[in-house]
Amino acid sequence: MPTHAVTDDTFDAEVRNSDIPVVVDFWAEWCGPCKQIGPALEELSDEYEGKVKIVKVNVDDNPNTPAQMGVRGIPALFLFKDGQVVSNKIGAAPKAALKGWIEESV
Image (cartoon, rainbow, N blue to C red; front, side, top):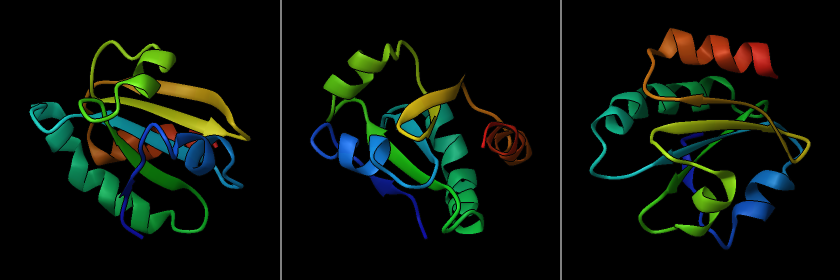
């Protein structure tokens, strides 16, 4: 299952109310490091299908949620479990590091 876009309006339904853990990628089209990790997140989304959902929030189009979460730099990754943030990671990382972070957090 590929990653999918979440908006300010759908954030609670898609993330906070999810019955499985959710990785949220706060990103922007102009962000080079965001583009670097995009393919790895797509692959991980397929690998974790049904176990962990990976979604993307474009900070330019949806400024409210990043502001509420205190996002100051992107890419910013937040892992939600049972509606709460259990871990976060700022900056680009290789796929193996992202997978390790997800594994230790869920």
